[in-house]
Image (cartoon, rainbow, N blue to C red; front, top):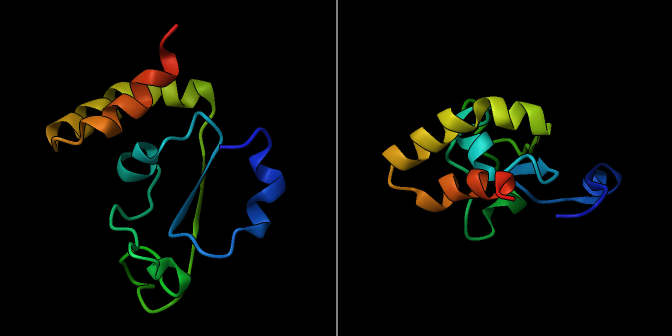
Length: 99
């Protein structure tokens, strides 16, 4: 998290997905935004992106939601995360709307 993520996004060299700003939790990418749910782990983002057609090519997804777009999709993301037992993913959306 940073105040101005667009300023540093071009400096990120290794990532399976890049989630910009506080209104774009990882659950957005897993359930709504479109990049594959299976992202590289164990440092594999140095040479690999998400599983898919481009499995053998390096890529990064850049994802940015506004407060309104996250609000409009929050219930769906929370329901999908909860149905998979990924409660922290659901909480990553819920916490952004707590007072």
